[in-house]
Length: 265
Ligand code: PLP
Image 1 (spheres, protein in one colour):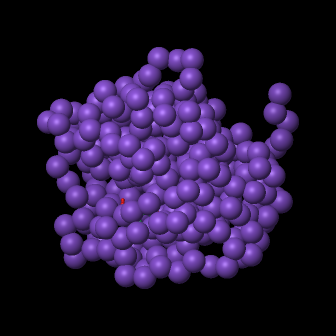
Image 2: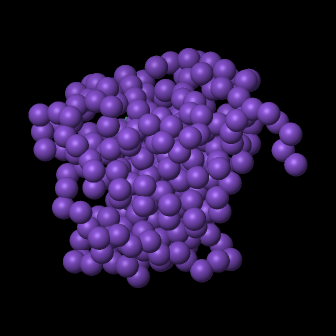
């Protein structure tokens, strides 16, 4: 029985989006909407609006360490959600922290390139993500281009998505939420939820014809919040997918571009 009187907390280690649509800002809004107390350690800062990223700053890893120590020293961290980590040095720091504290759930959103095209992970950090973080992830949530880069193989169709899940397990990921939104084959959007020893779960949603920002961050954070609340993986992913879909349908345009930001209200 859990006798700890402190509320369950979710910790996001990710990048800040000054435009408020993605990154840490989306993560904290999502945690709040799930009534989970959100903690944050800012691994990178982006100057960004709805039209793109104009600058990136990666603080000293010693300061990241100080943020992580502050969180683990005082709070009951049920889940760690990883987003934009920017460099191999940051990844090494985060991996060491996970090995030290062993949180119950580690949701890895392997953020690499923004929808606008901006690089959010240095090219030479891909190896570190593959070798250091993938084996520590209890769930990895790549979209198809990210899974292709992690695996070094193309994923051209739905059949290949199943093979990609198996390959991600072989690479060390305990569970996989593979997002098929980039597969434009005329059908509904298919996401797969894969965990060893269980049938693969399928989540299908009608394709919404919108240019949106922050959907990946929000989905991974919603799954993380649901896991922190004790939901089993398949339910956590399905409920998170419904959350994103609803937030997308009522999304709004805060900037001068056509890009939608999700509605968490
Ligand atoms: N900015 C930050 C800080 C992010 O973490 C992310 C995605 O994870 C993005 C931007 C990109 O968001 P999107 O590709 O949805 O525009």
